[in-house]
Image (cartoon, rainbow, N blue to C red; front, side, top):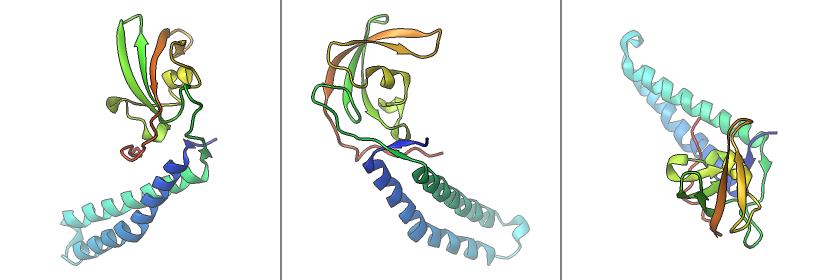
Length: 167
């Protein structure tokens, strides 16, 4: 089983692949040609940098195509009042007396520094399908568990600002 992606994730990946193939590839090939024309390749930093950028672009295209090939499509809609994909959820951590807000996203859009956690993460797995007021046990591994309580659920769905991770 591959990555769990929403239809919007797939559209973003397809758009990135198209841009990389139709726009960036041509530009990077041209940069390699220009750098090669400067003469001695043994000390031509521009040539090696251009070649590296071109190869990184090709690697990214292969990575994204492979991701699409093995992806599983998941729904990004939820029942009213239930935690699901793209919801912004406020959680209370009683052990730390702390309240945190997270947006649940697919793993390719997760970014804990920006408050976006994956539905595949321990917290995501524990709270998906739950309602406001529910106490959930987050299981990090067989030795580490902690409780959280769902304080609020915002039925957001805007994915425009959610970027796809780099490899």
